[in-house]
Image (cartoon, rainbow, N blue to C red; front, top):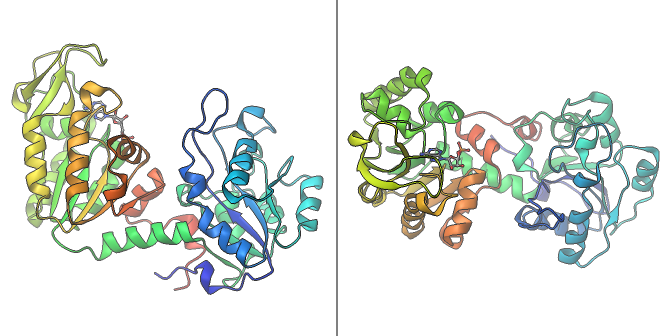
Length: 398
Ligand code: AMP
């Protein structure tokens, strides 16, 4: 699979529409609390500035109702932050494809940057409405997708719009290209031993990814809430831990498949069990085989950390998606922190995917020591599942 990349098409002096992912977290006063999704898009924007483009930026933000403007979900704070980061004026549009915005886009000159309002103010965005995507496309001569985080969605500004541009007038931005390259390489051509760590809450969210990973990896380490469905499938008593009973047959199938292929599958041998799901609850370390009735496992225990660290020691490639426990509560964060440090310490190529895991790595301070931290949770999972993302398909050359 070869992606059309921005550096291989002619953008010089052209009007360029860049689909970004500016869906940043904000506090109750609309202050941006983490601007990494904005800074990640700067390479592509700066490249277009240097190439004298007239630049139209577009993104979704939060979950508005799709029935028009809602102040709470306006992209104005993003425009301000872009202004601070780029040290240039950002023209904030009042709408998206209304007459005034369309004529502003038409008048936009080389070197100017305009930010459209939240794409999801229009219900046509998530419905991939043909009229809406045609209007968006009509604003520019070139379409750039740099929004990895939504490229698994067939939305108007991601998928529909791309149909209006030929392959020499559309491309992946630097961020999207980098994300795809890392995941493609790691899934199709990893340096071995290839170890995958999978955690998070449920098996159901990662079932496809697990099925796709097992034939590709040498080892798979399963932690987090999902481990309990596997432990229960093996006949363990897991108390009130998170279990998806209906997926026990799937968990068994995954373990059988791993055995058949010679893939080593590791489960926690001990856990931090608590009497209730809260940070004040009484908690203790117990063997996975000895979780008391009514208690729940909320983190992997110290022996599991040692076991997982040893399993990681000879890895040349590590792919990590999903925390090892309820890392949001200090009491149940230790397992995830230890595994984060172990991954960071390793000399392997380390790729971290998933919003929660990226959030965790920020808390552990190991960001700098990871090879690559993906900006997209759902999108990176779908890549691991072996899918071609709708927003990427439109940009594939061969
Ligand atoms: P996911 O979105 O599936 O990656 O799940 C991330 C969430 O899983 C985090 O919010 C964690 O708090 C949660 N989680 C991790 N381990 C457990 C556990 N043992 N029990 C319940 N929730 C967990």
